[in-house]
Amino acid sequence: MSVDLSVRLGRLSLKNPIATASGTFGYGLEFAEFVDIGALGAISVKGLSLRPCLGNPPPRICETDAGMLNAIGLQNVGIDAFLSEKLPKLHEKGVAVLANVWGDTEAEYRAVVERIGDDPRVAAVELNVSCPNVVKGGMVFGNDPAALGALVAAVRPATRLPLVVKLSPNVTDVVAAAKAAVDGGADVLSLINTLVGLSIDVETREPKIGFTTGGLSGPAIRPVAVRMVWEVRKALPNVPIFGIGGIETVEHVLEFLIAGANAVQVGTANFRDPGVSGRLVRDLARWCERHGVERVADLSGTLKTRPRPEKVYA
Image 1 (cartoon, rainbow, N blue to C red):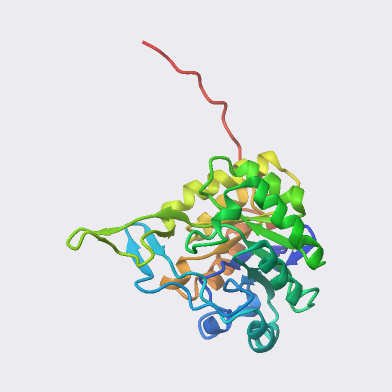
Image 2 (cartoon, rainbow, N blue to C red):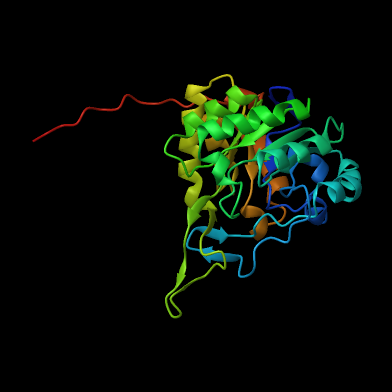
C-alpha cells in the first residue's frame, strides 16, 4: 500500500509531517552527515535576530531525569549572515525552511521579518515569542495575550509568507494566547516551547545553569504538550498546528497528530540521536502501512475521548 505522508498547514505544504525544532538542529547543514535533510518535512532553524547574538554565559545546559535544561540564550549569526551564508546551501537540500525569528522589541521582530520579506527560499516565518532564556523579549510577549496579539499584528504586514507563532506553555491559559496570535494574523501555531525549570547543585548550593533558570525539554514535557495541542485544537479547529515536546518515537508523533496537530517538530531527541528525524519519517510510513492508513493527514484530530465520570462519594 502506498501511503501519502504529505500534509498541509494552511498555505504551508510539507512532504511529510516530521520537522525539526528550532535550537536543536542548528541551521540544518550541521546534521547533513546523519540524516537526509531533503527527506524531512521541514527544518526550523536556530532563532534569528537582527544582529549576531553570543547567547548566555556558561554553563548553558544540564541533563535532568527525563530531559534537559537549557539556557543557550538564542545564540545565532544574525539574519543577514543567515540569508547570505546559510540559506543558499540549505535551499539546495530541497527542504522546507522555517525561519525562526526573535527580538527584544516589537520593532526588532518586524525588522528581522522585513529582511526575510517574501524570500522564496523560505517556506514560512516562525515567531519565537516564548523563549524563557533571555532577559528581554521572549516570554514578555508570549505570556501576555494582548502584547502577543499586538506583536503578531505588527509583524504580519512585513511578509506574505505563512506566519507561524510558537507559543509558551508558561501561561495559565494557552488557548487565550493561541486566539490572540490568530487574531493578530498567525496562519499556523507551534506548541509548546520549553517549560521554565531550575536545577541545583546541592554541594555548591548554586544553580547548575549560569542563567539560574532554564528551559525544560524532552520526554518529561510531552504529556503537557499533547494536552495543550488538544486544547488548542478543540478551541480553534481550523487553525493548523505543529506539535512539539519530547518526541522520540513514532508513537509520540502519533500522539500529537491524534490530539490535533497537523505536523510535529522534533527537538531534544536530536542531541541524543542526530538521525532520529529521518528514522521517524520511515517509521511513520511503516506504521500507516500496518494500520491501513492511506493518508497521514487523516489522523489529525481523531482522539476518541470518554465522558468524564462524576465523582462517587462513600
